[in-house]
Length: 355
Image (cartoon, rainbow, N blue to C red):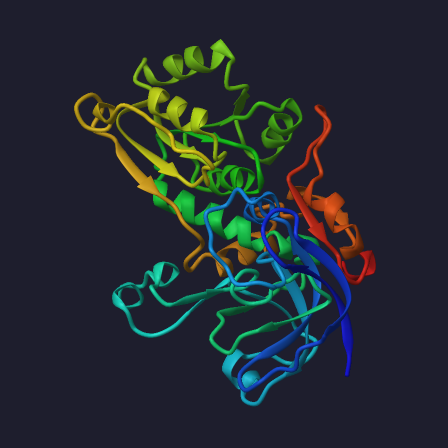
């Protein structure tokens, strides 16, 4: 019986363990066994680590919902079902949905009432090997996309969904708040919509500088008075046409309500650890805002891979640090220096040579 290394979560609040003798799963009918080449650490994973998330899950499980792998075995019927062969590199979407409920009937499979999640209710990618379920939506990784860039597909696909929700037009002045993995993806994806001006708001200067190389026209600290004066100059005092909130900070959401123009479009994609009180009159009485939520990445994984394959989005630039599984605690708790860029931290379960 083959064994592997894996990180197992036995409970929230620092109850993760590195285990070196976990049984390598065997693929059942329609399933795909992959050798995990890279697997990312998400803010949700850190919320599991510090017990600040809102989820109720069964333990133990292997975390990791951002991953890419090489096919090593196929269950009965899996090759035809997924269009895969041994040796292919492939990514599975994290949400595995079932049935034919109201949401799936309308193409909203990411909101289905019946769902499993890789890295939460099913074992994920913080391991040397993992199973892609028979009902998973699986995408081949183009040859021109490295393993590190491929590992960025899930947050990038989220970012693209958020940009699509914003309905960006040619004349729009667009503001993105937050320069994490999704915010940096939004900057690159929004640039492809060719807005009139694209502005990043983020506290750290190093990330602001990187965003300027990835497509932002301007970048400001949230407290910089030039932010307001620049928006006024660009818009005749109206305010931003579109505001994309990707930081998960309540202060950024409130700033967005202040900076956006009347009848503007605001997309909220951050995950918030605390309630954010605000004056509801801003939405209706004062500004008639179009406030939209954003969740997961329906129909955008393939787009993310294609844009990276064509060189239109730089996925590798957003993967800044890599660790072996044995150093999981250092990876999860890593805090960047003030002048350092930290965007996506990943595991490479088989070492750097797998990238």
